[in-house]
Every structure is written in structure tokens, then in C-alpha cells.
Length: 340
Ligand code: ZN
Image (cartoon, rainbow, N blue to C red):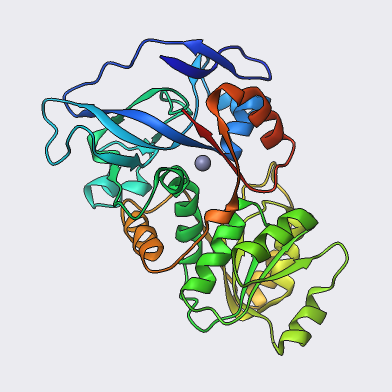
């Protein structure tokens, strides 16, 4: 089968011919139809510090996918060949305290499809049946291929109750934009999204009824005045990993404000913890998706009118992978979906 492989410990990715994975009794073989290129894949492509210490080479990459079941293991029940599916990319252990309590997403022994297990940028991918998410007819393959990042957005946006609240999203990458759209969908009052890239902000405004703010040229305080907000944002969704964005968020929160953090800083940084203490701000880290509550909620929202399809800005055949990865690494404003 064709597969996109991180074949060498250097920048790049290579299309290679690989054997179709052999499945065990509790696995499912998925024939991949569409895949999303993620920031994680770009770290691996660029072979940055994180990738070097995390990803063993050679490794088939990719973890955002939709396809159909091509084969099922002998022990697998309730799934059938030909069924349309996506899947959770975190493969968890079953022996930790968290897993045994049903909090699978908190398992400390998690491995990642396309990171340290063979991935989905291939004609076939092997997934534990436990991780399979059957897709309803209402969710097509390209939406199925971006459920993983939409799940990050939903997990972050629903970390705190945002109904009737004013929400600040920092970082207008695809996940930030989708997080802002979710905040809107579930009933936040004002949703302001910040970035310094005008193309990304324009895309945010296209995807959802949110207020885009370019913090390079516009002051958040004056935006708040314009919206009639007196004290500050009730809830923050930090999606950029940029130290300046977190500082700015903290400075524009209400007393007792709540911040969910999904953006990963590239290195440790200094920030004013005193402000967190004196203003009783809650900081909460977000990782992956809740297994499997986030999946349930996001698919229910997609079926009740949440529409984030416009966040996909390019659809390309997998054969054009070299161009697709250069575009993604070059800061493409939206999501790129590869067709297999
Ligand atoms: Zn991803």
C-alpha cells in the first residue's frame, strides 16, 4: 500500500510502498478515504526538537482520518466490514487507575496513532476496535477526517460553562476557529478571536459569527468597549501557545475568570502568576479529547447545526503530498484534507 512515511531523521516526508498492516483479534483495519494534515504532522515534517525526541523513524504518520472498515479481528463485536468510521488517535492502556475509572483520556500510558504507532496517511490503518468511531450518514468523509481537531476544539470550548458568557479565543488556527464556532453554537454572548494573521482572522469570520481582532493593530480594551463589555471576558480559550497571547488574555479576564489552555508553548516561559492569584483566575490544561464524551458531543452538535466545514481550505490528492506539506508548513490559514 502507499503510505506517507517519516523515513529519515531529517526534514521531509516520503511516499513509500508498505505492507498492509496485519490486525490482531481486537483490531480493525480501516481503508482510509480522507485525512487531515495537523500541526503535529508539521512538527514531524519539520523534524523539530519535539519530533526528534518523540517519533521513532521510520514511522507512517497521520492521525486524522475517515474511511471504511476493510477487516475486523476475531474478537471484535458490533462493527462490520464496509462501515464508515473515524477513530480516536490516542491508544490507551487499560491498567492505570484513570482507565479503570473510565477516564481513558487521562491514561498515562497513551500512545499516538501516527506519532509512535503507525498512522493513517496510508491506504490502510490498523486501529484497536475500542478506538473506532462509527460515522452517521450526516457526517461525510471530509468532516470525518477533521473530527480529531474538532474534538480538541470542543473539549477546550466545553471545559467551562460558556452559556451566556463572553469568551476570548486567542489564536485563529483551525482549532481556534472551530473552538470559537463551538462557543457560538452553544450560546456564548460575545466570542472574540485574536490573532496577528489577517487571513486567519478573515477565515474565522467566515466560519462563525465571531468578532475577529488583529491584536497587532487593534486594542482589546476598545473592542470590549465597542461590544459593551464592562469588566472583561468570563472564559478564555488559549489556542496559540504564544506567551504574549496568554499575558493579554489574563489582563482582559474578569475577576474569577476561567481559562482553558490547549496551545502548547514551544518552550517554558515566564508569566505573572500574581495576577492569577489576586484575580482568582482558574487555569486548566486540555489534552486530546475526552474518551468518548467529546466525540458524542461534537457529533451531536454537528447534527444540530454546528457547521465548521469552511475551515477546510484545500482538498488535494495524496499524490500531491509534497505540495500539501509545504503549504501546511508555510502557514496555510485553514485545514488541508488529503484524498487517498
Ligand atoms: Zn491532529
